[in-house]
Amino acid sequence: MILIVMTNAANRRVLRQVLEKEGLNVVEAGGIEALAEVIRNNGSLQAALIDITGLEARIWDQCGELHKRQVPFLMLSSRQSRALEAASVAHGARGVLVKPLTIQHLVQLLRSLLENP
Amino acid sequence: MPNGNESGPQRVKTGVAGLDELLRGGLPPRKAYLVCGGPGSGKTTLGFHYVTTEADGKEPALWITLGEPPEQLRDNAARMGFDLSGVHFLDLSPGPEFFVESESYDIFSPAEVERDPTTRRIVETVEAVQPQRVFIDSMTQLRYLSTDPFQFRRQALSLFRYLTNQGATVVFTSESSSEAPDADLQFLSDGIIEFSFMEDTRTLRISKLRGSDFWGGHHEMAITERGIVVFPRLVPGERAPSMSFDLLSSGIPELDELLHGGLERGTTTVFSGPSGVGKTTLGLVFLKEAAGRGERSFLYTFEEDLARIVTRSRHVNIPVEDMLRRNTLGLERVEPLRYSADAFARKVLEEVQQNDTKLVMIDSTSGYELTVRGCNLVERLHALGASLCALGVTVLLVEEVQEVTGEFKPTQRGLSYLADNIVFMRYLELAGHLRRAIGVLKKRLGSFEETLREFAITRYGVKIGEPLTQLRGILRGMPELEEKASR
Image 1 (cartoon, helix red, strand yellow):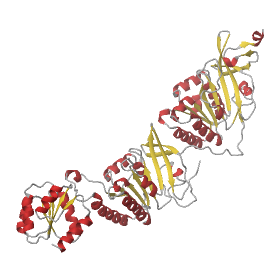
Image 2 (cartoon, helix red, strand yellow; image 1 turned 135 degrees about the vertical axis):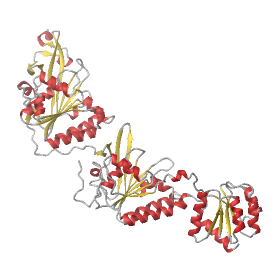
Image 3 (cartoon, helix red, strand yellow; image 1 turned 45 degrees about the vertical axis):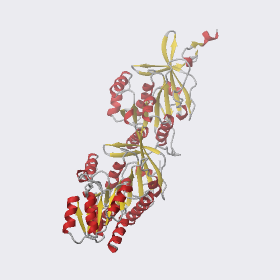
Image 4 (cartoon, chains in turn red, blue; image 1 turned 30 degrees about the vertical axis):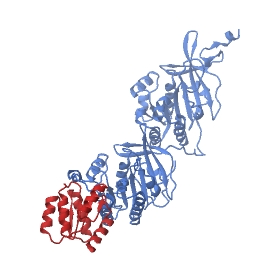
């Protein structure tokens, strides 16, 4: 089960379509509260994609929670930022991807995460 | 005038009057053609013609729209008299929900997300409809579904190949701009039809047509209430060798003497002179005589309204009303700003061909000049005059010169070259009276009297006097009696 955390509903919809087409199961969270609930209730998370756009600093607590549960995750951002990269890695992210992504690249990364959690 | 290639390979007609003539009968089938031009230039209207030309079910037509929604297209088409109910639409335009949802995605580029579903929808629709005619409005929008120009070129080419392999002839539009030039589409298309709209004049040009001859150059066009009409530039045909040049009498013996019998049939004559000297009346004299022979003439007047012509003709014993009633005369007041030169020429040729009209009079070249709108007057008038003469029609042109007296100028606009005959009229002052003189300056196909004669317009008609052999200096407008001059 892939967790996608994004405030932009259009992004969630498009990403879900892409991942499901690849045969992956998806669970969505539109904000920090929803993310906390998914983490609490879903024990089968295999990986997560978190779009930092529109999320408050409290997201880092949830990132720490994912890391603690050994769920690999990637951060997504609209712009390149060293500070964001540093914070993301410090809270357990495997890396930061800058939008727009290419579908093929994202799918390869996700498969890699799933194979080497 | 070139003919459509009726006997050659089968062509796909665009349905636009005049355009198929330029294309030698229509578009070569199973190829892809670009229609380009600025906003409002008529690209979508051409689509209305194209998809409804064979709308009887024989040639299924598919309209792929990436801009206007189908309902709007149907409405706009219906206002011009096109029925798109038999046309299949594939709507790839954004719906209203796109705006209402407010959020758009940015996680992937549109090229990544939209291309596959778009391609799938096109393939599904083409397989279902099996179209023979496809109109894509516009390909420019599909450009945004490609990650780079190279990919776009490949995808566009591939799309055209797919559609043409399925049996379709494709016409597609592009909206060229500095941000998205359409040079690549021009290269990969099999033909290019360009629309332009400059200084109130719409023109169309075919700049490419693979595997076929076509009629190049700019041709005037109009977007009317019933769609596009193209006016292929007039190119005069050859006069039949057997065509006779028999003389047309004016019905006035003295005038016929001056012309050594009259004007040759199938020639162009310029009646030149200052304002009010009697040029139109002299032309009407020839039309009256033609009516007497049972021949039809047509007078296109740019200057006077019909009521004035009828009234003043009656005052000089030319029965215009009667000629109109008997159909030996057609008369139309032409508003020059309503017509381009080629549109006017088409109108005149239609009249001649439909009604077997033998004489055409244009009053005057100044009015006609307004239809030319900056193009070469002599060139256009030559094309019209020569086209009519090739059909055996006698052309009378009324040309006003500015100077009432003084230095003699036969024509104001350098029309001497295109006239077979020039008949000029002058005012002259004689013993304190204003008089009129008439003479012949040129008669390409025959001889003429080389003296001038006095003439007058009376209520009994035009009266021509004896040759003015005792005067000199007539052309300066200040004649003197020869014996006085020699003293």
